[in-house]
Each structure stands twice: as C-alpha cells, then as structure tokens.
Image 1 (tube, rainbow, N blue to C red):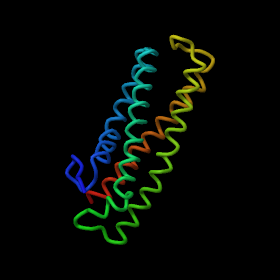
Image 2 (spheres, rainbow, N blue to C red; image 1 turned 30 degrees about the horizontal axis):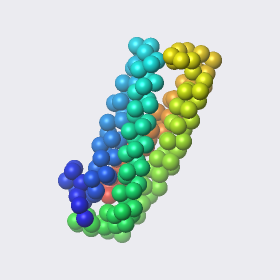
Image 3 (tube, rainbow, N blue to C red; image 1 turned 135 degrees about the vertical axis):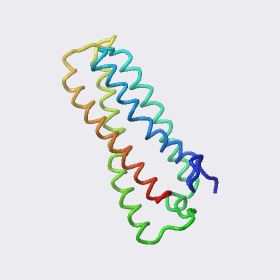
Length: 161
C-alpha cells in the first residue's frame, strides 16, 4: 500500500483530505471576516464557491481512493503496530460520529449556497433572504467545523495514536 505524505500508513488522498480539514476552518473564518467586517459580499460568495468546489472534488476523489484501497478497514489494517480490537472499535465509533457530520455538511452547505445563488441579488447584498441565509450559514459553519474535528479525531485514532 502506498503511504500518505504525512508519514503514516494512510493514503495520499486521506492525507490530502486531512490537510484540507485543517485548512478549511481558517478559510471559513476569512470568509466570515469578509462578510461581517468588510461587508464584501462578492468576495464572501466567491470564497464560499471556491471552498465548496474544492472540497467537493477532494471528497469525491477521497471516496474513490478509499474504495480502490478496499475500504477504510483495509487501509487502517496496514498500520504498524496493528490496532487492537478495542482500539478498532473506538476508531469505528469515531467514524460513525464523523459520518453524521460529513453527510449532513454538504447537504446543508449545498442548500445554503443554492438558496443564496437563487435568492440573493446580483451582485450579492443584504435582502429579504439574508436572515435565513445567516441562520443556514452559521449552521453550515458549525457542521463543517464538527466534520473537521471528528475527521481529524478519526485520523488521529486510526493512524497516529
């Protein structure tokens, strides 16, 4: 099995997605700064579209990579030293929690972006949709941060600890 670039018994795409999970939170903070402090709605929209597009491509490539390597258990199974049965159970529990957020995030974020593109004026500016957008946006941020935290915890438990 090929190893990832972070030096653990993972795959390149696993390491790529873990790196993306670390970088997404500061990028989200930058996007929030653009809209809340700078009132730069165009830059906020553009950054959100770039982030969503990059993450969508990364996650699709990641899912293909996981399947090509026989699934997450096969990848974790290459680890030295091997995980005990108890450790593997913990990894699986962490993965289940992660999947709750990893599945809900693109749905919620996608709805937030789609509604904004349909309902916001062009160029984007405050409007009747702003209140709902703000609520959906914060829920998306929380969901994405929880996806990042639980994904990093999975990686740590599966490959480092």
